[in-house]
Length: 183
Image (cartoon, rainbow, N blue to C red; front, top):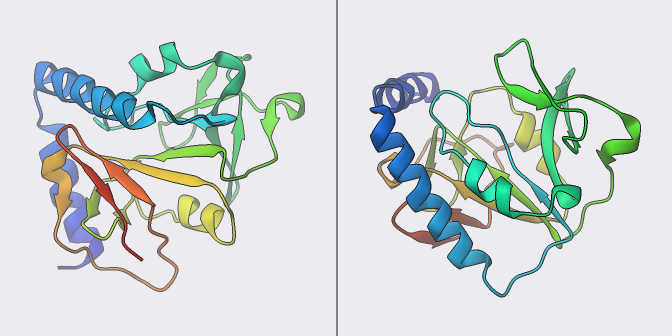
């Protein structure tokens, strides 16, 4: 099946999820994530604001140190990351993103930077089906950092169609399990 058709199918399924189920499954996913984080330390955490029923990371955000937490902001074809000291605003896609301010931009990335990436779906090889803009794929190209995908378990499939520019994540955490990419 083509990416666009799969994207639409998964989005409709996710948007139909009742609020209580979405909340419970988001909590279960954050529990899995917290268990995975135990004993690991990162200098920076890049989260996201839930969009179109992506798993909510608000509980995780409330636990992490504010000074070390950043969120993506789309600027043209690029994606940059800022602290939330200036609050959030809604962009042209309907995503909540931090206000841009040079003093609050994360500019140095390393293996001690944890980037948590939402998706429409993931596969067992840790490739993602996003919204089609390619922002995460472009950002990840030739970068060294720790990548963690998050998804509800029923949005993980055996294999997704992929293109040469698609970048896998190292680990995928769902509300039920942890998948690690084998090279």
